[in-house]
Image 1 (cartoon, chains in turn brown, cyan):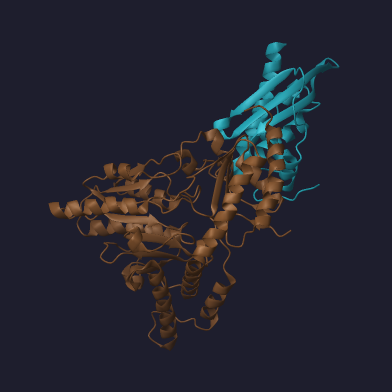
Image 2: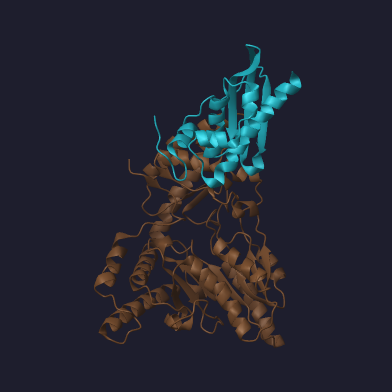
Length: 401
Length: 132
């Protein structure tokens, strides 16, 4: 049997049609988009075509699309770039940033560095047990010196979809108040939309965000590619400096084949969005319904309704995640876990900790993140092989917990 | 069935993990050693049976139960293999390195698991001594 891939939140395979769109730009149309000659112009035309395609999907202007090397770089550039830009404009330290406890490390480790080295103040908002950010609490956390708010669109571990439009409303009110009072400090709204791209609406106007991060390989595009949407007028400073590419926000010769792939993949995701979302959601719901019938002491993590259509995440009592992962992989099924033992750092998932689950439960976390190529037969196979694995591991543990 | 290695684990570790030896409990054990903490993700319990043979106290049977990762389960299984038949004096000298070496090495981040196994054995011996 072909190995089953249930880890699409980690990465997705490149869509074969996307590979076709990339191929000409490796050997034939290899020019540097900054060169004036015909080779360069050919690359530049392709690059700007891709930018237009992405801009159409995000409902923004082409100049607002910055190509990066991925989600991590986009998040780094968004946070560091904005605060550096504000400093450059003469806004005084200490400025304040609000984010949440369940962001990706690309956000959290960046804000931690901004605190430690640059003296910024950072508030890490709590979430409820379903992983939801409370926009009222966020409103209360806004201070006179708050310059940036970063809340993810959808969580990568439990799939909870955050109320971005509500948050955008709160920020808009603050902005209006500051305008009335003549306060010069801007307040920007960034979202890490890396997990959302395949299934949720990416219209930045509807979402009300100023800055948004995307990663190509999460939606069947190539690894090493990403987008940062930066609304026109946003104060942002380059964090990678050089030849002034990407409107001087992100220097470095553009990865033309990668960008062609990213744009093609995003277009495909957009075209197939409704169909794929409904397909994976029905598989997800089937799994969420059936698993507790086959395995005792299982609970769903994340929001019961406001969740990504492709993520089913659970806590399995009395099971350690790494042991579960290896057993499943030896049966040909790839999943992921937030267990400490699987992390390398020996730290259990900060997301599950923030959802207020006790540590001993977090060790038994299981995440199944589906993709468009998964089938009901694959879920059925999982439902068949998983219960004996749970039984075996619970037997090794006996009643010692 | 022989398993191949897996990620950072060698074949021997995976073999002990997938097919652990001496799993279970002993009825009326001579000593019990329980170490670890569920919040840390590893709990290990060893039961030992101690009998006198030629004037020496010898571990004649040993069984384990473990909650934890592949390394925790494999080191539990391995220490039962090593310790059975040893005198208490020999068993007391067993270190985490003995367990890790017998498994052909553990990934650096997992070395502490072999600590747990040795600790559980030493604790079981102490428990026996207290009762004796």
